[in-house]
Amino acid sequence: MRQVTPPAASAFPLQDAVRGVLIAVVSAVTGYVAIHPPGENEAGFSLSPRSLAMIAIGIALQLGVIGGNWLARRYERAHGIEGQLAPMARYILQLLADGVSVLLVALAVFGGIFATASSI
Image 1 (cartoon, rainbow, N blue to C red):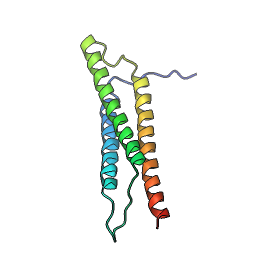
Image 2: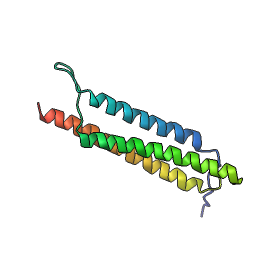
Image 3: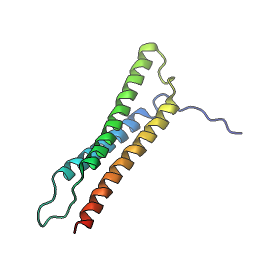
Image 4: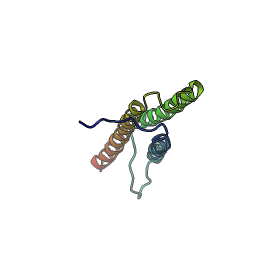
C-alpha cells in the first residue's frame, strides 16, 4: 500500500492565490457586464437580483478563502510551525470553494442567458 505524504509548505500558496484571484476577477467582471444591460441592437444578457447575489456570494467566498489562508500562514509564521497547520485540508477547502464559486457564477450567467432567450 502506498503511503501518502503531505505537500511541502510552499507547494500551493502562490498557485492557489492566483487561481482564487482569477475566479474573483472573472466573477466581478461578469457581474459588472451584467449590471449594464445591452442596448437595442446589441447582444448580451442581464441578470436578476438573485443572480447578482449568487455572483456576490462567489466573490465573497473567494475573498474569504484568500483571507483565511493569509491568516493561517501568518499564524504559522508567528508560532514557528510554518507549513504544519493542515496544508492538505486547506488545499481541499480551497478547491471546494473554487468549485462552488464557479458553479454559482455559471448558474447565474446561464440563468441570465436563459431569461433573455425566453423573452425574445
